[in-house]
Amino acid sequence: MSGERAPVTLPRLAEMKAAGEPIVMVTAYDYPSARVAEEAGADIVLVGDTAAMVVLGYPGTEQVSMDEMVMLGRAVRRGLDAPLMIGDMPMGSYEAGNELAVRSAQRLVKETGCQAVKLEAGGTSVERARAIVRSGIPTMGHVGLTPQTANALGGYKTQGKTAQGAIELLEDALALQSVGCFAIVFEAIPAAIAAAVVEKLEVPTIGIGAGAATAGQVLVYHDLLGITTGRSPRFVKRYAELHEAMVGGVGRYVEEVRSGAFPGPEHGYEVEPEELSEFRLYMEQKDGISSQASWAWEPLP
Ligand code: KIV
Image 1 (cartoon, rainbow, N blue to C red):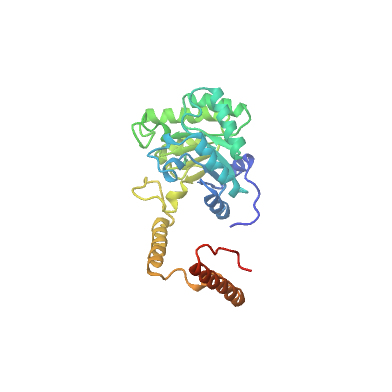
Image 2 (cartoon, rainbow, N blue to C red):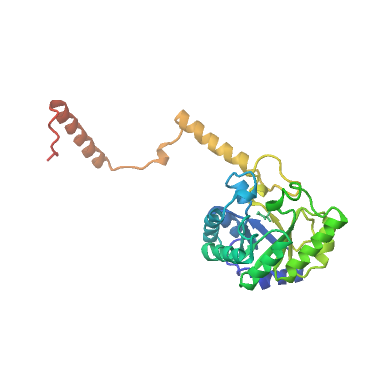
């Protein structure tokens, strides 16, 4: 799965959609997760603001700052070669105006080396997306459940469940496409609604809890690997149970240090016997001198 891969570009994503080749997106937040995504063959790596919860321990995505996203993004960049890297615009970095949105997007691109940015929701975000696209930065939209504005949506809830909700979703997606978004994330949307909306769009859509009709899928790295604990949203499929494996590994280390089983001779370094004897002799002499006189701290000949 690893090896030389051609870099994933925007035209390549459009080609994949046209050919019905599924686009695989995964989040990453540091160098090791980026290496895993790279070697596993992901097409797109999103430095998602889910970092707030899965990496930084905040209660929601609202708390993560631009400085934190930049630090995480720089680490991801060092681990990626082929996948398209997208930087998520954190809450507060774009909503207040087009100028702020462009400045924030430019900061993400310049300081992390991401090739595109993502922002959430329709409404005023459509104008922000237009401004960022016009500044020359590829932009991904995100509709349905938009965690940054989850409070306004009544919580982390499936979106587009009513005809009116589905109409709004369709209009938001069309508007984001019309201002030049190269792709759109569909989060927590009934599969039938997502499938109908996807039909009306030309740009690739990437689903998370939106059924199988989208051009691609995205999952959060820590969710799919079972690093996150507690209840997961229904759309998460766990492909590994790493939290248990990690607690087990660290637990065995704790036990072995306490029991003296670790470290063993194989974990240490050798010294030449003559060097050791000379060193011991030095110590013996030094001990002899110091027990004879407290002032005798002369260097040995
Ligand atoms: O921040 C994130 O990880 C996301 C994905 C869930 C799409 O926005």
